[in-house]
Image (cartoon, rainbow, N blue to C red; front, side):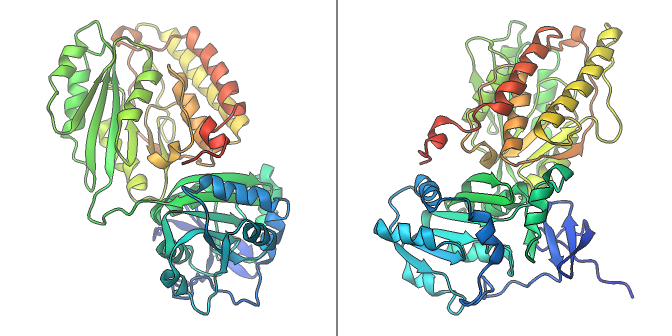
Length: 478
């Protein structure tokens, strides 16, 4: 007898595979959104939280046992746009938090399953705390939709739950703790963040624990269902006269279905006539042009473009012709479906796209060796298994930038984006892309001696320095 092939309960993908069995239940993994889920999976229903008041979630006690209630309340208040007056709590292990909140004059309500819609009529709910409840016995999307329905605009959601980031041998302690109690859904940080965005939450921040995570986010402004997602293509231009017109025309001619589009061109005062070429696109409805007074590096131009971009999804595109615009479709699909928040277009997944410089063949070999070495270095220090972290094609949801202050000015921005996103738990999905390297005589701008020094510096600074900007570190997130 052939068992039916279960699709992913969150993204509906059929790209799933049996992983193992835990608590007498078969677990499958979705390769598209990285959810690990039990089969059979609970159906969506009005009983959104699937427990009775007499039941209590056992492993949530272990998860937050080391977290002082004052710390949880501080995170909750730091994420709130106003004072907390009325909050809702579900799950166990929250008695200390409840007592402290009541002592501060905050009304605390218990989310019960016998009347799951009562809170919608209560109104004025400033925050909801789910202690280990999300995905434990019920469909997590249904649970989040229910919370979204009764929270005030900008209301805060705080989650504690076990996570299984990567399921790697180095994380066996977290791995074992995550499966201590049976659950319907097991998340890693990236899949959980994508689900929160899909369910209407934003400004996501998480704190990793040995056996799980604490996640705080806010209810996002309601978006019209008829409004299409917006893509911002950030395109830095500096001394690219030979290629920039063809590249811009190709990008503008590319049909991107199911999305609005803007091309943010950052022209850095070129000396070869590129500025005049870019100026010809003034007035184009899909183009926004930013003129810089002087060149300050590709990283600075990209950061300038991101600051002016208005899209939900951002894609970085160089003004040369090394990459294929036709790869946009495969790169954007996981973002537009909100299964992933961060995608890399890998030149080295599948057939290895080696660099061959006809004018300096020996330099091509040096660059290829450097690619292998620096990729190994970033994987070792960040505990990842990436194939091409330095690719130009970095595509990400705006939510990935929450709390971060990008600062690199040259090609070390590639390091900063990847390292900081990975530290947030956003391990990228790598998708193969086409790539033909240009030579230095054709305009390649990497400095073989100077830039590697910047890359070592970037690795130390962005891997071991502060992750979030000062406002978020101090709790001033509004």
